[in-house]
Image (cartoon, rainbow, N blue to C red; front, side, top):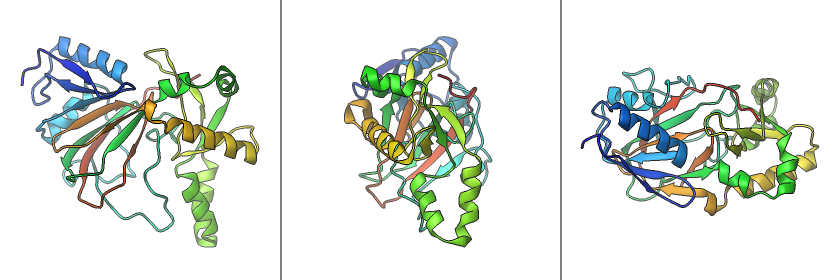
Length: 282
């Protein structure tokens, strides 16, 4: 494979592209890197198939898009302190299912710029990933709803709201855990502007968003339920069936994603987050 003729084939009408003409086992020339970065901003999710990468080549590929960020709460490869290993594991009893649309580490003051997944071992069927175009989700709202959301801010915590409810119901033993999460929420605008494209996108997260500021309980429940249903519309999505050797790199500033939990088969992925550069701004 030669890094001279890069082509993008859209996966869906909403976002995502299969990229050919790239071999991350070799260094990319400047013109190829420029094309990839432009394609990333245009398609939001880039997928490269049949990539046979060492750990160092995987990291080099991701560094074309930004600096690697280390997340201490996710397990790493034994011989590497940066590459995360994602597999099928049993959740704690009180934890919710993992199939919620989310923005990676939205509970941080500065969420990640993007992330990469490299498929090591994949099931014959199931375990797909779905991405959502947050630009399209914003643009599809009525003018009245857009005006309502423009000045709203959300509170984001390090645990899904349903899981936190479960902790609270768990009694005294789990109350300290819940309190720690609630005391340190991050605050982000519900509509933010992408720092490179200048386009507005919904910043809605079904996994980590606890509430919208200045709304009462019933209002929060109604608006959040509407927004979570809205972002799940298929017209905003692309869905990818993983193959061993596939590499996906997505822009976390304008997408959401979720894993489809429809298999118990072995599914091993290597993951690298891309360091965020600034807090989301309206």
